[in-house]
Image 1 (cartoon, rainbow, N blue to C red):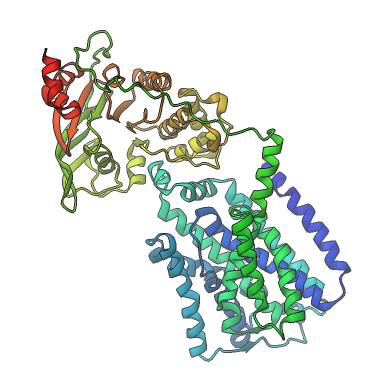
Image 2 (image 1 turned 135 degrees about the vertical axis):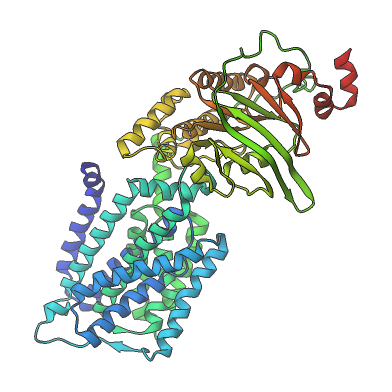
Length: 597
């Protein structure tokens, strides 16, 4: 709570200054403009809760806004209910609408999602016109105007709007600093990695759109009270959704300050130009918002806030260039295969426990391509299994089948005795399966510690426990010194170790490592291998994919060799590295005779 109050301090100071400004403005039009700035800032924050934090662009937030406006209008006209009760009721209507809209629409991705969202307010616009609600005027209440928010002094509207905005900012800040916000940011930056880390992405997105819809509904209800007139185009029209999107994108998405900055700049400009030029240039407001979007795309694609913040951070850091990985390229004559007996370099054998993972008859085809063909193997508790094979052998496809990212055509995946086929990645993570990726999937705008904390949530019962699990995992992989660095500033080796730590933070029973050594130089690969060896000594069960053997022969208890999706060999490192079929698959027939010689 103290941290939340500290984060709100700049907003409270800005609100106090704004309130003083509003008290000294006597012109009714300018006073209305000051109120509308707060209304559209609040609406922008509602859009930001969904689109800013999840990255799913919504063109349909006018649906929730309009439903809130009509809830207030119809509630007053037909039931004589005070807006003080109707605004919370509109929030409930908006939240329920969000759930109803989100459940089918979240099955879509990218521009399909954006276009589907656009359909909802357009449909509602025609529905309300068909119902005969082309123009509703709220009844004037002269007997008890305060009970119906009909203030004679327009400054009170501004103060009420300011209180609403502060409440919405507080809610947004609370979301940002909680598991809720971390889940949404993880989904935005890499949804697959979020799923693998145990985040139920559909559930969190539904919570997000419900909260977003509730805020939009409340804002729409207050907007109707301020203007006293509601028409379908004024609350469901394209310009309404465009204003929420534009003020957020202009100011900066994914931050509380973005919609505030965007509304403070764009709303006064558009309102003043509309008043001065609206008669001669119809639709001048739309022109302003269109120009704002073009300007942002060209000058500050992430918005004014992030542009200013990034420049300030670079100046503070002395404009230091981001470090890059020093990838050492091996000479051409060094071959990625050891066709020799494995002696002192091999890992000593260890007693193996019960079967933790049992794969039986697993197959997967993509059209005519058989990516995985009738694969079966067991992984015992405490074992390290190396899954190797040439490029295109089906290794990553196999991992995707084990981890729930793909469904097999046939076969079983038994984890701790239970068939996991059909389970989603977050469910497998909750069951105890951790995962890293061949192509790294960091949450680039988060620190190392926060990246790892996302993985800890699947086991942690509280924020403190999540931080504890994350700190322990960061220490285990040796990244304590860079724990507060932003992931975008890390080297390739550090990113690989960070993904490993994120998987470890969820306390998995089985760790699936997909080409953890990819992109690393020889020395860096040795460091990562040392970390994996240390985890093995601590009792972590591991399945690791690689297409080279040089490091693997010292690491694994057993090899599973794939070629064209089928099991080519299965055995201990010494026998597999001397197997003529394995040598042929890697290097061709001419190397078989050389190895035998």
